Length: 444
Image (cartoon, rainbow, N blue to C red; front, side):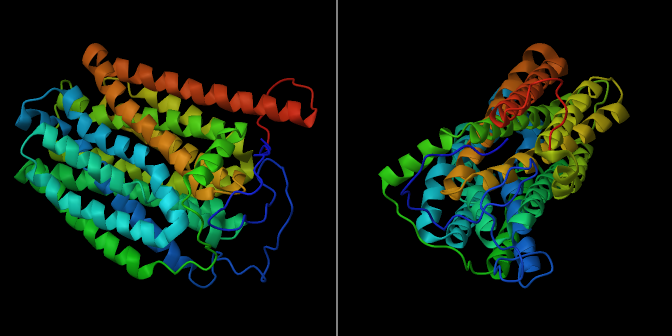
């Protein structure tokens, strides 16, 4: 899928466009230096490990806070006397707030810098996180979670833009994969911690503990992240922002990537919002601590996200997306079995497929956008978290009306959407290259 011309001419960007390099599909642009003369960071080079670990910790804090209530929904339902679909709004409000504010926050990062915006976002989010345990009612809890999600909006797009500017192109997929791996560790640790803590002391103490962990991650992130060397402040003029967004949305490849991210997250959000309810019911009837431990399968996502670069190298971008979609679909179908080991195996496959697909799609956005990278990443993140909110809400409604099979049905439809979009991208690339459209292989 060769990146389409955005048609932009004089858009003010936060940083000069990085030189285009051959991507995994074989498309090329004007080549730039990737040798020793390139001052951007690379594996083994100065600052790369500090940068990777700092953004890893930012990913841990982001996902731990964002989904801190997800494993606790059955307890929140019981404590506040609300239904599963009502309680799911504590997740949907946070992801929805992030989706709404990620674009404005990316604009601030263009003007004030990636590191500054990420630091401020984490500071506000962890402060709200320490207030969440004291929410007196469901509406107050949902409101605090919405504010927390809006604050966290400064992290994902700014982090991706920081990496696109400060890391050499050939190392970009790996670097973003490590950030996504931090997301998976944060999601896992937040849910495991809350599960066991809540079993002993209740859900309020559990989310408070997650808030304290996030504070430690935020402080370490600010101390470790190297100062940017390739950032140039841009304009906050609304006209410039609108033009940049319009150019990105006019790019068919970016539109496909945004839709893929949203659909993958629809599956993931629905499954992990509802799984706690399923496991508390017969025939499983698991206690809250064990349900929290189920999220240890996120470690699989850590591995699959961090190896996304190698997957793309072997299968190409579209081939890696097909593999991620197929793995996710297999996990969904396997999770229908009334056997705990098979359900766990299904969750493993869903998690591996999701994180691989997300890492591939998000890194492709950074490579495709030749200007306004923060806005390009912000649009991806917005679509991604809209998918999370939709998955959480629709998945809970489907579970309420049709049980776990209803949630799986929603997920399967979303995976089919990923496949259809990826196939259409393959056909479009063949037509653009003048290649006859025959049997669909897995093009590189």
